[in-house]
Length: 452
Image (cartoon, rainbow, N blue to C red; front, side):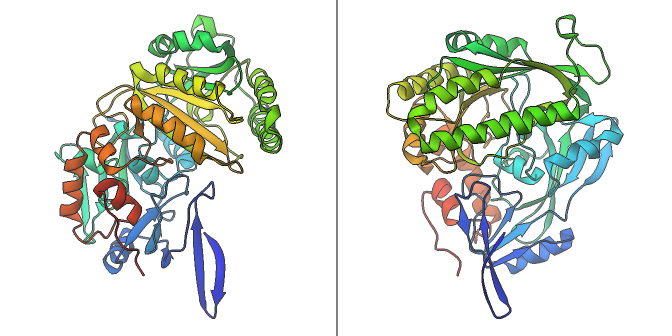
């Protein structure tokens, strides 16, 4: 939150997301200390949205009503060692979860490369990592406790027929105050980062994903190589597979040098130069691919999954059927190569397993994720629109927390159970307490006036 004006004793606070692309001044900003306070706040609010770290690039959390933050409702509620199910408070930040799980010898089964988000935000927007044998957060949830539009506290177990709708729900069914996650025994990851010819990875990516636990690649546009990241899971304390036995544990110094100096520092220099002098982008990208590759190391899973993001950007990401992923990527690459754009930010391609959560991007199908970015100082609309048209033709589903321009009609075709979700929203929140003009437009095909 940012102080934008003050008159007398009243201070108006502006909310802006991480990239600065979404800005709104809510009527009030509240941080409850207890669940009972959450219930009281919901009852007293005409329109209310929950916000965590503000890492969504879409205006999913923006409201002119009450903006509620759960940072003070953090930590573990309970842990079942036998089942490895752990119940967290909704405001728990992902970055805090490894230390919370350490006494139980547990870890998250999978996660993305950013850990600033609140668990409630990561779950309700469908945050994911990579790995064909693993799901995103949506597939790890086994129970939730929610404050509904009437201010009632409702436990929803995975045996409830409507449970899947309460996982990825963008806050439209209420405030997630507790989330139960299916965790796994703690494990290490051996990471191999290498530069490969673009043509080779286009031909072999899906096959690699079938035999490697976690695989993803980054293509710097205007270059002929990619940075491939292949991660192999190893039980904590266990020996590595023979072919990876020489992988060293990264020291804190090595990790800082790699992530902060080379990755973030180097990327910032490259993006600043490319923004000012677009003609040099192809040369910079070819150099960047070489500098960022050629590492093998081992570490606790959460340290390898996560990479600090100091350079701000805007992002759009779609999930397409896994079998369509490389074809969609190749079409995007061809468009960039044949156009006038000079794109300095790499395109990220990941792949993950199907789940059974209706509003998850991976609902009912293994999915390839294609994410495009632009440096925060560079215009993105024209580029994103052109990429979006390609991804839509390949059956793409937009990530809820990232930029997209899809209509409610398109989303109905992309998410088969969206109509049932809409009915549940209208039944549980008939007055639209958790709605916003943006969410009503993409889900209902109409807008509602802003709360005064």
